[in-house]
Image (spheres, one colour):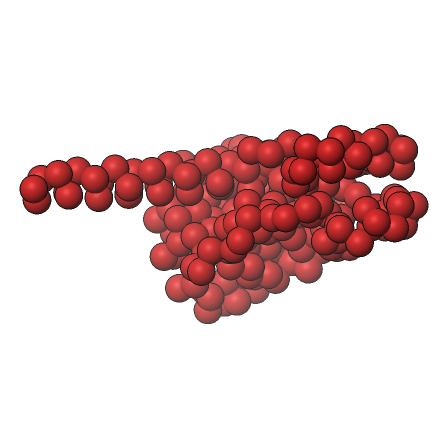
Length: 217
């Protein structure tokens, strides 16, 4: 993985100096939790080189990997309040050249919406499931799709939702076998986990092709 910069609590000068260093080395960089105010305060030449998404607060600095033709990862969110974290995951995947299929607003409060789109998820290698409130979506998906499901609990909700702890505990206590969980609001971490899984799948496919080719000779 390339270095990613967590911009929350960093000063604009600290971010600028990081971009100076990356520019000197002719490298690319993923900026997470970059606010619009921080972006606006950066020098104009740096602003023009940052592909910024305000919803996810992510910035892609420099040249990202070209996107693949077909998605291998689904990013599924329960409600529109969860989309910012889902977009952080999607943007991280895009930075590394992975096309993903984004499906939003399919939480279990309207289960038919998920069932109507389940065919779009089942054939993919990995599913990232993003949900706040009771956080039930990841466990439901893990019971419906064959591939790995990565749960991202989100800090949406009020009262006993407790800033995402209810969703986190739901995911950790799930009886769906093989469901894995990242930290609250950690779309970036979920994407990196998905990238590791996709990488392993691609390596295994390459090794299988090599073995088959050797056998044919």
